[in-house]
Length: 114
Image 1 (cartoon, rainbow, N blue to C red):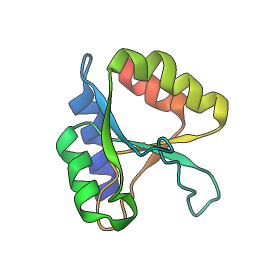
Image 2: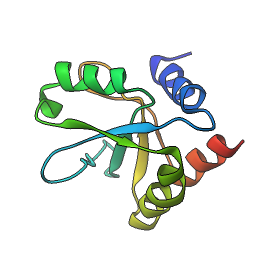
Image 3: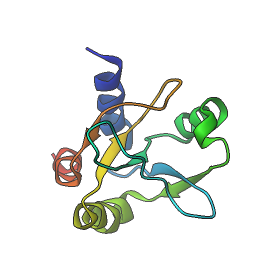
Image 4: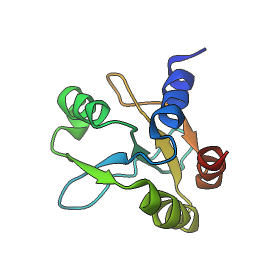
């Protein structure tokens, strides 16, 4: 299993049925960087400690702060909004460049509900 696959699997296990998810924001909002395929993804993590690690170690995200999103808001507002806007969902990005798997919002919703 790749590191990205392990991180994505950990996201679904750690969020569970009632956990929060975390993203990052600055005064301009939540980032949605463009991937190598030209599509944009908004990053989310399953634990605050994962977000803090990215902020501390990835220079591109050093100016951001953690933002908690309750599971209900993530499922009912964020995922539909991301789908409407044509964005992917980056899960538990890690490493020096904060990379990992990206999923369609509908797939994230299906796996959280499954």
